[in-house]
Length: 181
Length: 163
Image (cartoon, rainbow over all chains, first blue to last red; front, side):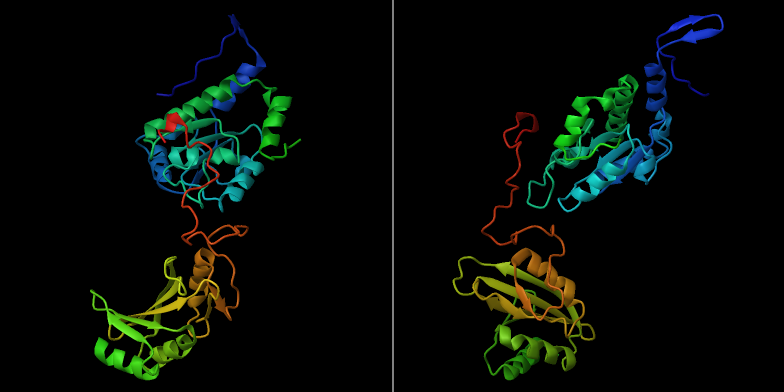
């Protein structure tokens, strides 16, 4: 059986349906998120389970994983990011096209986790902006799925102009990220 | 070849200046000076069959004034399955030891790692720069004067993380 997402709020009549463009685009974006898995350690193993048939991330429209940042919408960072890896992660984020979201999976990606040490980045939000944090060491696939669903909520309800606002530009500037025009 | 025979030949080669002992796992420890290293390793490799350089590492003993650092070499004789451990003591002010890259090509990265973490200067190394840590790091993190924790961490008091 094929499930179809519910239609957004709108006015329905015989032969027509009217709603706002925001909602339609949000609906499309939320249900066709292409993730870029950036897996460096054990959280990546949980992600593999999440992708597999038992948990099946594809049910949420994230069938298509891509390892090219230019074609993806969601950067999923799973695992410890060392300081040496930080510029690589930032470059991957830079290369993604707007609109883009970031899901930080696991204690290490969120805060450095148990690795309170000179070589480990104390949370990826030191170098790139994060939309949703998934706690756990490592989190179960259900938690990762919930994180993805939160991202879907964000995508669904995001204003089309959000990424043109001064606020957004300032936020990127605080990370020293140049906004693509 | 057992440890006694090996010990005797090492002592002979170093004019009785090497300090040998056998540890609890029946492995021979040899403490030598930095200037004896190349000759000894060369003879172990070419005459005694220790053709495999298992590891190079270092240790920092801040309380040992005059030989605060120790560079440790593990060699393996694959034919007789015998191992030997060489230790070279170094002072903090003169932290130089000759490179083994002329004898073992595999010493290259191990020496870079030891330099990266302890700042040991391997004299004659073809490319002595950091290998694991960030290039712009300005200290050698496994020296004991540095704290293990990341001092830039800002969430130490964050009650949500229970730290």
